[in-house]
Length: 99
Length: 157
Image (tube, rainbow over all chains, first blue to last red; front, top):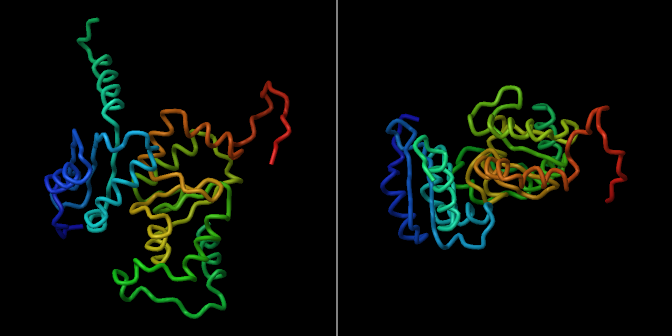
């Protein structure tokens, strides 16, 4: 676990933006610096009409080399429309929400 | 459960030329041997619901595997229709299952021999209700207890 994988949140984000045409990407490195554990939120129009499984497969195929190097990989995938809904429901749940 | 895993894999390999050992795992991980594939075929078919995980349902060795087991429990999957395979006990299975499913991470869930997904997918299907539908249709939920109001329905298939 101490060995660095050479993969960083930045490099993953860049690859995801370039290869998946992502409109929003957030990659969090949960490994404490060794570059082994990542969590991602990915929003891309390329996910349109795909099931969760198909979306994740697309991401996994795109990031095949990177994922092989790291220990843990978790990703949430949304189409732009789905992402809008997620954000709406989050803001509605906010403490200061006024209609 | 773990003994079962081993014997199943060994059974499937029996009579087949000795498979590649783990001496050069990175080289061979990409090429799933016939014997490993046959062993995983059997594992996937061993129960209607099959989870490949790190550790055991009682003692998961990874947070993602633990979360997946918890979801299966919350959904009420019938233990009689469920088998878990601990990939940490068999390096061939651990590497082979990734290639077999074309899925890079563990845990991995199969229902009626069909790959459903990993932990993230289980979680999102759990909260959307899709997982409940899937389990219902697959007829893998534990029978309702005596308080069940609905009369028993004949199951088709």
